Image (cartoon, rainbow, N blue to C red; front, side):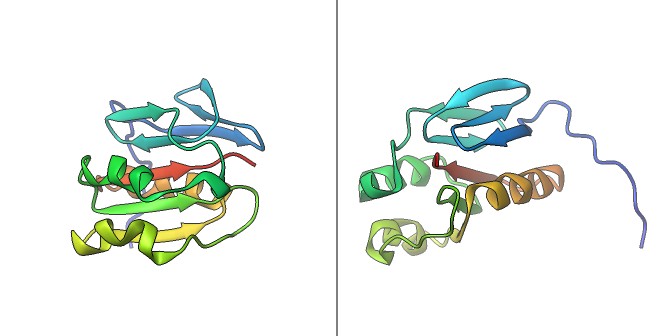
Length: 122
């Protein structure tokens, strides 16, 4: 196995996170957001309890290979009907806490994958 540093220049990288924020390329974002290698969408969803199908439609139009749903500081699963449009479009959905989603996003983005991290605060 060959190990080497990944070159993440030119793509969005999550450089830090906390209970109320995420740093993307060193820039602080508060509230729900979507991070893709080539785009950051702010104002996505305010809280886990606010999630609706329309929030997942915002991901569908960006056509990622996989969506990492960061559910906040703890793992919570939304009703599958909310993200049925993604599954129907053959887009993978993985649910994890937001810290794990941030770490996983960086790994997949460094591999050149079209990944979207949909991150919720708290």
